[in-house]
Amino acid sequence: MAEPIKVVVTGAAGQIAYSLIYQLAKGDVFGANQPIILHLLDIPNMMGTLEGVVMEIEDLALPLVRGVVATADPAAAFNGVEAAFMVGSMPRRQGMERKDLLSANVKIFKDQGEALDKYAKKTVKVLVVGNPANTNALICSKYAPSIPKENFSAMTRLDQNRAQAHVAAKLGVPVDHVKNVIIWGNHSSTQFPDVKHATAQINSATLPVYDAYKDTEYLKNDFVKTIQTRGAAVIAARKMSSAMSAAKAAGDHMKDIWQGTKPGEWVSMAVLSDGSYGVPKDVMFSFPVQIQNKEWKIVQGLELDDFSKSKLKITADELVEEKEEALSICNN
Ligand code: NAI
Image (cartoon, rainbow, N blue to C red):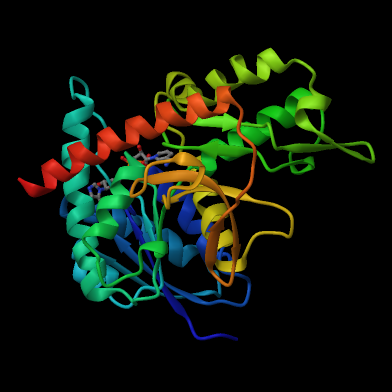
């Protein structure tokens, strides 16, 4: 069996971490032969709750878990880690403006970027989940200059999973019969869920989703809105934000980084834009990517019509604006 790897989860006393840690502990993400040492970071006044989480990890009695470090000290949390799930952040409180939230969370990701830079392995793969995820990932990477920028990504996998599941339900097929759904842009309500290049296996035939589900107007309008607002719909029903599904998506995302994507398939994740598809450079933009040997490549050559281009522009403009706000917060 391999040597254990150190994996950090921030926001470890929170609700996403509660589901995520179990997946990590049972080998769903790094493989059934990869032991792990869990590093759990939260803020000082959550240490009591975190102690309870540690007890539960012990009680899982899972052989892949070779150690647990629960701490409020970023130096201990990020020390020697090879994978980082950056979930911890401040939730939006009543009366808080979007800008206040951005301000609070961007500072967390600046500080934790600096800590990753100092203490993590240079090969660490960093997945940012805490919102605003794309811009937090950009800031985290900026303050960790000794770690390659390609090692940072932000999560839009939950949006992808939502879109894939929605289409599968509409077509009456199992979810894994729908492939190559794309989420473009920001993990926010400006994201563009796109099934123009997606396929569905129906009986023994593989068809473009646009041919299988003939209502193009639906796919361009109501479908897009449904996915864009799915997070808000979950909050309205559960009175808390998506956690089980967010944790599953974080596991899916890191598993694909670790183990690669399947031939002919792609997944969506927010990575540093290189200008592909006319997206401005230097924002963390969700693209379709393929991954091999832990390195992602943006899928090239997909045709975008004017409708799609206009959707990409809206979400790119929002990311540029967020980036500027975030940089001005960091510089002050
Ligand atoms: P939660 O509020 O249950 O947990 C967050 C945890 O982070 C808390 O335990 C808190 O004490 C901790 N925390 C706050 N500041 C910290 C710091 N500086 N260092 C370490 N830990 C810190 O929230 P939940 O539901 O687990 O969500 C976490 C984040 O994930 C939120 O920002 C949420 O908006 C985001 N999210 C992102 C999704 C995505 O698709 N990208 C999907 C769902 C949620």
